[in-house]
Length: 233
Image (cartoon, rainbow, N blue to C red; front, side, top):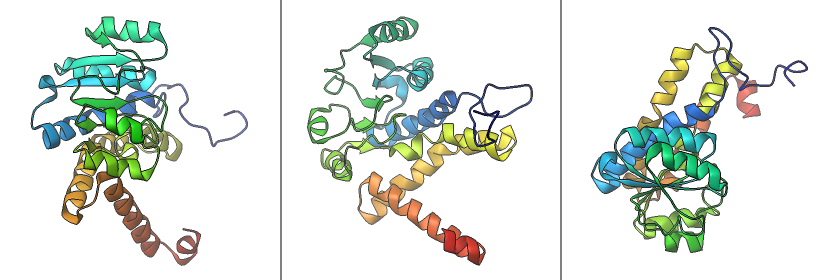
């Protein structure tokens, strides 16, 4: 595809280039977000936590290594039993069936597979008190974010914490230096902290706070842009 259009990114890395597989960058943003959420809701480090990871593809595997190295206990689940077994062996984790991972005894639930995993039924099953993972569109509906809050479960909004991959893709596409991309990815937890603060200040759930902050930034960017860009926005 890249031979026909410039609008392709995530290509194999070449010498001194930026980009490549975005999965590790996604994980690099989720991990510090998970640390922040654990301190915020559980008041303890990841070394004292059990993390249930649903989905052990590129992002799930890359993410799992980080809490494992930090001393966390892992529960892993995937429809690909061989992939789950490989990760469990590599990290000393415990394999949990796909039907049981939501109700597994864990402190943090990390969805890293398909979206829509948090629905009315799932919110009632979850035993974890933090949801923070790399999957897109984790909430089946916006109402499910409110259900998590009502169950005293802290949700780290997906598009806030999993943005590292697309940030590094943007670096490749827009020609940012790798150092700039690194800094933006490493600031993921800072952005999540802003979301949690906004949520607490305004009495809303984190998913609503994230949407409100995003809309504010878009509106501010439109006001600062030239007239023709403002109209387009």
